[in-house]
Every structure is written in C-alpha cells, then in structure tokens.
Length: 186
View 1 (tube, one colour):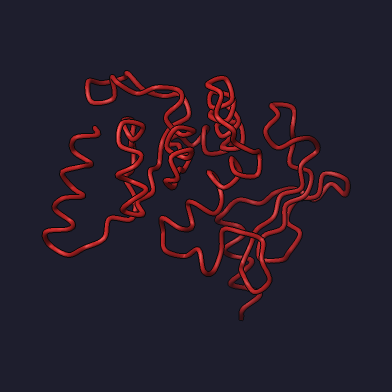
View 2: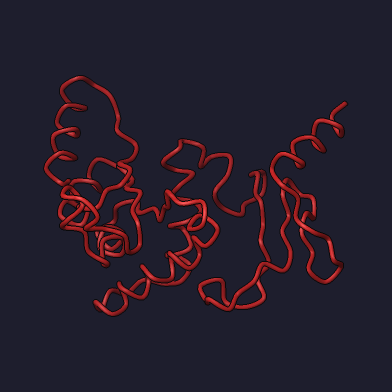
C-alpha cells in the first residue's frame, strides 16, 4: 500500500538506510513522485490485483504511471508461468499507458524487464543493458518482442548460443546448464 511505502521511506531517512525497491507495489501509482525523489524502484504486476484487501486499489496503469513520473518501474511475476512471458506482461503495461495517453516508447518499456531490475538489485553496473564490458544474455525474437506471436529463436547465455530454433538446438534446464558449466570449468 502507498501509505506503508511512504512510512518505510520515512523510516529509512530516520535510520539512515536506502530502500532500493518495493516488491508487490500495487499502489505505487499513488506516490510516484516520492519514489522518484528517493530513487526507489517498484516491482509491479501488469494486471494482477484485487486478489486480497491490500491489493484492492491496484490499477492497470500502475507501471506506466510510475515510469512517467520518472521513477524506476519493474514488471515482475510470482508465477513460474508468468515469468516466462514477462515481455507480454510489459506489453500489457505499455498498452495501458498508451491508452491513458502517456508517451512511452517501446525501448523505455523494455527497461521494465531488463535494466530497471538490474538497478533494483544494485548490479546495473554489470548487467541489465547491452553495453561493452557488461554481462548480458540475449534473445533474438521472431517478431516484435511485445507481440503474443513472438518466439525466442536464438538465446545466448554468457555469450554461448543455448537455443537455436533453426539448428534444432534445444534449451536445457537450469540444472543441466549448471552441470555443463561445472564440467567446462573443471
């Protein structure tokens, strides 16, 4: 809730610590200026709210409103299914913002699932954007990544091609990938 986030910000000032992010920030749209002033990110769902009392005031425009105020917006999911489609979740939030008349570019919306998450974790100097010297995993999409028709055609993890639809290279599980990385390091 917005009032609780504001209280935590007050406490952080009183006791001298920095809040980097609020998770499940369903009412962040009520205090976007406060979040921006204090350099605090908000991890939010694109369209999941009103499932319990403290999320009752959530709105579809939460992410784009927070972003448009200059605060750090992050699209997140608690679901093993939803996490696989964060690009579509970002697209839903972008569409809600555009319907509201907010001027948000697709590149800005992409930061909701890339650079802003790295910023909240304090690792944006190492990852989160495609810049020389940074670590990055890369997905090459068949279509606009915000389209429900987009498929990952190629996936590079740590610079290694791990998925290639054209060559029949199948994805591996995180467990198998970890074992392969251990073997490579031995």
